[in-house]
Image (cartoon, rainbow, N blue to C red; front, top):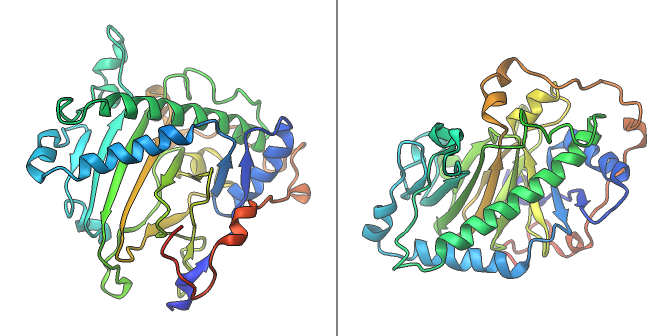
Length: 325
């Protein structure tokens, strides 16, 4: 069983610098049908900004608990969630987080909606520049998500701008969450995890980590015993996974795959952006499907291919060390 949990999964890389969007869509379609996880590269998010986000994230989580509690999450779940607060359902172990989302602009009617209400921020005297860094990064992640959405639309044999409407992603509900896993060791036999098995509820999630290994996916949740495979971080790339919303919109063609995080004794930091859709679409999504054809005229499954990032060749295999880069 342990051997099965040490496998490393090679994933497709989506290159946003590729001007041949149809070629990208062909590759992406295979990844989305297979497991719904892939990498995105050439996204134009600067490494300097990403490093600043992780540095500022660590500064916040290093604060005394009484200071962090001053930014305790509100009724819309924005703000700080302490460790062990979320372990009742999935067996999460020593995971603390900070949650923020899209805000409605001044005089914007959306501002009164629960999904667009103001964020809670740490004291600017304690963490100067923290809010600006996170807001800038959130906007950059949202930009990349919208670029990916164009290629997802093509992969579904739809117009590239299908998602770029007021009903979809023009005013999206988009969250960003900073996570800190406080060391410790996972024990699946006892139901103890860094983050227990789940699928994401949104359209897609964009993930960056500090390089410490831990993320695993299970492509077939009904397989006995379940087969869990590691998804490593690679330099210059973000990990992307599809959520339940897109699986339903695509009539089950694209996969929202179960995943979890195993703690390996090291502190681990990550930042993810969860993209949903507009509030108007969200309210009707349980009865809504996109006009996805089972057989695509342009992007037939007979002509799909995958492109693997060369950095994957450097990832340790089998029983080799998985302590991160």
